[in-house]
Length: 171
Image (cartoon, rainbow, N blue to C red):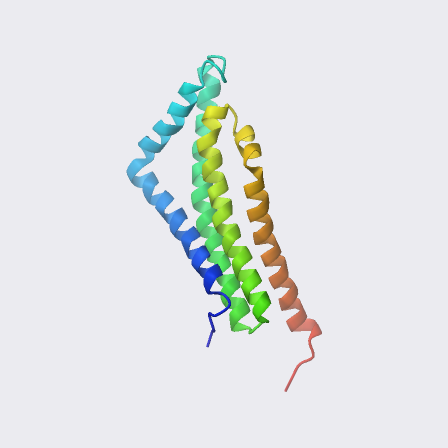
């Protein structure tokens, strides 16, 4: 039986990431035009100052911003599911409590943070005139969340390799 004591907070955060991504997907179904309108509005407000009146440039950024919204949806859900798999695996294999807590929390926070990064980048880009500038302005969120998720994955990999190949078998 899996004991949830050390993984419960990471699983909770991962579930929030999955629900965040799911709610974005649902909002695409009901409110796609409104979301795209918000992106276009941000570009229109900056059309003369940021884009120099070039509507084609503004449209290009708005189009890429919409892609960022879809990335937020997909990354949140996918990484959230992977985080839960990581958490359940470390608990099921009875790894040390600190490893369970660390892997679960890092992967959960990473899954939520990375999706939020893409969404915020998408909303910021039209007003900034560039998706690159938007990503750069909040790049620390991507670095911290992506790094946390990666560290969780590498840690789990290391523990699994140790358990399978280095730890003496007990009978």
